[in-house]
Structures are given as C-alpha cells and as structure tokens.
Amino acid sequence: MKTPIQLQQENLQEVGSHMPVPNYSRSSDKTGIVHIGVGGFHRAHQAYYLHLLNKRGYAQEWGICGIGLREADSKLHDIFKKQDHLYTLIVKHPDGKIEPEIIGSIVDFKMGTTDPEPVIARMADPDTRIVSLTITEGGYNFNPTTGEFNFDNPHIQHELLNPNDPKTVYGFLSAALKRRRDAGLPAFTILSCDNIEHNGDMARKMLLTFAEVQDSDLATWIAQEVRFPNSMVDRITPVTTQADIKTLAQSYGVHDFWPVTCEPFIQWVVEDKFSNGRPDFEKVGVQFVRDVGPYEKMKLRLLNAGHSVLGLLGAIHGHPTINACMEDETFVTYLRAFLDTEATPILGNIEGIDLADYKDILLQRFANPNIKDSVSRICSESSAKLPKFLIATVYDNLATGGSIKFGTLVIAAWCYYSDKGKDRHGHLIEIIDAMGTELNQAAKQTKTDSLAFIRQESLFGNLIKNERFTKLYAEAIQKIYKDVNIKKHMKDMI
Ligand code: CS2
Image 1 (cartoon, rainbow, N blue to C red):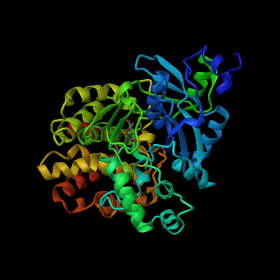
Image 2 (image 1 turned 90 degrees about the vertical axis):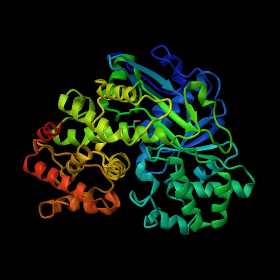
Image 3 (image 1 turned 135 degrees about the vertical axis):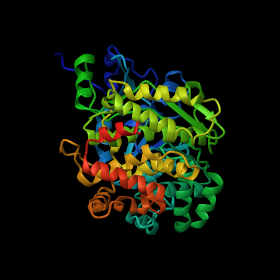
Image 4 (image 1 turned 120 degrees about the vertical axis):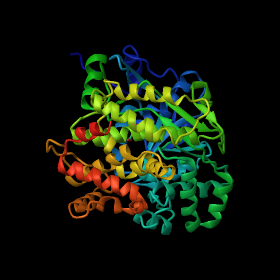
C-alpha cells in the first residue's frame, strides 16, 4: 500500500484527487462563531452546515473557533494542531456506499483548561457573534427533576469566587460577556445545540441564575442583550473506530487521526432570534421557525427515547449495536409499540409534520447497517438522558391515563443494567455515566427493596408516589431479576 497522505492544509490539493476538499479560503482571522464542545456531533452537524455555506461563498466571516473545557478535549486539540483543524466527514449510506469529504469550517481551537485568558479574549472579540454549545445534557448543570441550577458543583463554587479563572461554560460566558459589556460591544447569541427540550431557554435560565449570584448588574445586561434561540438538532453520529481510520487510509489514501462518521440524514430547526446576526443557514436547508418546541419534543421523545429503548434492552440482551437490534424482529415490534402507543399520543399534532412518516424514516435510520452505532454510546450518560427522553413521557402518560408499560420495562432494565453491569450471558458491560456510582448503589438495593432504584428523586421526581407506575415497575423488576431473558419479557408484552 502506498503511504497515505497526511491530512493537513499544505496537502489539500493532493488529498483533493481522492475526495472533495474545501474550495474556500480558511483563515482564523475570520472567526464569527465560537463553539464549546467539539465532539463528533458538532463536526457532523453545525460545522458541516457552515462548510456547505462556505462552499457556496456565503460564510466568509463565520469561521468556527472550537473550545475545549475538559481535559479530554486536549486529544482533539493536539490532532487539530497537526491537521490545521481539517477533518474528514464520512457519510455512510444504508446501501454500503460511503462518501468522505474534507471539512474546513473549523479554523481554530483553544483549550480553556490550562489558560482561560485566550478563550475569554476570543469570545469577547468583536468578530465573535455567536457562541454555540454542544456540551451534552449533563453540561447544563441542572437538577434533572427540579430543573434548578446546581450550586453544589465545586467548579461553579470556584468560578463564583474567581471570575477571572472560569472552569465551566457559565464562568466563561459570563467573563466574556462582562468584557463585551465593559467595552461597549454588542452581545453574542448563545446557541444551544443539545438534546434538551427548550435548550435555549434552559441555557438562558442557567446562565442568568449563575450571573445573578456572581454579578447581578451583569445578569441584567445579559437578560436584555443576549438572545438564546431554541433549536432542534439531528444527525446520528456514532463513535469513530480504528476501522474508520483504516478504511480512509487504505481505500482513499488519506490519513486522518480523527475522522467523523455519520448517517446521510441531517436536520436543524432553529428559532430566528439572534443578538448580532447569523449565517444564511436557510440557504443550506436549516429550517427557521417561530417556535421550535413541537419539533424538539418530537425528536427527543421519538428518536432519542427510541434509541434509549433499544440501547438499554439491547445491552442486556447482548446486541452490540442499534442496527443489530433492528435486525431482531422482537426489538422492532417493541420499539414500534413504544413509539405508537406511548410516545406519539402525547405529541399531539405538529404542523407540517406527518408523524407516521417521521417514524417510518426513523426506523430506517436506526436500521442503517453501515452506521453500527454502539449501544454503549446510547447507554452512556443515561442519567442525564432518560429523565428528558423517556421518564418525561411516563409522566405525561400517567397524567392522561395513557399506556406506560413499554417505558416502564426499560426503566426496570436500566436498574438491572446499573446493578449488574452484565448482559444476559454474564458478559461485562462498561457503564459510562457521571452518576454511575450512585446508580449502582441504588440498584444494588433492589434485592431487598424492589423500588430502591426509582427512589432516586433527582432522576425520577415523585414517580415513587404513583401507584400505577410502582406496581408495573415492581412486576417488571421481578420478571427481569427472575429471568434475565429480556426478549421473553418483551415478547410477552407485544
Ligand atoms: C442519542 C443521540 O445520545 C443518544 O443517546 O440518542 O446522540 C442521537 O444519536 C442524536 O441526538 C441524533 O441526532
């Protein structure tokens, strides 16, 4: 095999004979967007939309500067340094076709962990007009059931007392906004791109709560000047594997230390309220609407919840990926039953959307055999996801008298998963969750108290007081703990 070409700016022309490369100039002088949390999703979604705009000559002043606020981000930082912030996006189609393309919309990357100053300066620079976020559900620092800001977080405590040494997104945002206000500069827009209902409103509420304690004048200014559009984001982006890196090198002759893979589907629905301008995203298919609420709810309660249903049940059964679940008829029928009888009835009508079509397409997306989205990615951080994706639906159905049995079995499966950390064959499952220890401790008590897991108020609120739920939950627990053959229990219900 010929030595693959290393992906970097000076090799772009050569790389261009193997796959499409940016046809636009890339300079870090033109940074209009600062993005916090540059994971695979951001690279497959927002950065891709900007790349499309750039290709058409529309986004010259909207280069992205990525920001890492976690130690773990230094891996990407180092790779981006070697690759001039270039990366390959590999779109994987269901028929086996793969389409790699080099994306050039990210032009700079800074770590905030070692020295916060350059990050604050970048955010406070007059060129920066949008600060966007994919900091995951957990990054918003709220209590999942009360929705209130968590002041107990030691990083928050630190930055409240040391405004010049921020640690979290809130410390950085308030430090930069203060600098802008003091310099008489307009505020930037804060654009949340996380899977949280009313994500912009949530970001606003959390930042204002924080700023109110740190500097109440600043909080007043932020409330008046900063816009926080809500947005619904969607593109399935599995974890990159060594095999992806190898395929790129062997079949396309390009070496990229960290390419990103994704499905062909992409969607972004955003409220059109920006403090200081925005790119012409509508030119590349982004939908601007007055109220994004119904779209967010639809996506979180169908797609994300559907993922968790397959992920947790699949993990116990021993299915490694979402598409493996979709090759199993019992899983497909169960998922359909959950979506149709529990998730859909609470959504009501969504103008311009045919929910039946949406679900059909969703099932096809999940079944894409090329994506190989691991159930471990889906189950990771379930404590931040399930309250929003699934437990909320159980609550809604309890209020309306709707069905809750399919969702309840998943919650019982989550307890078993957190307790044993093993699939039905006894193979170990690695649990990745910021609340992993608490989940395990609560689940471990199930032997003596079948409701122990759902007594965790920060996740389940007062579900424990609802008899219809606790009765079904206790039955589900009994079944799974007696016989871990989860498919049998699923079959009994469909
Ligand atoms: C997934 C999401 O994290 C999860 O559990 O459901 O990452 C999902 O793949 C994306 O939201 C798709 O847009």
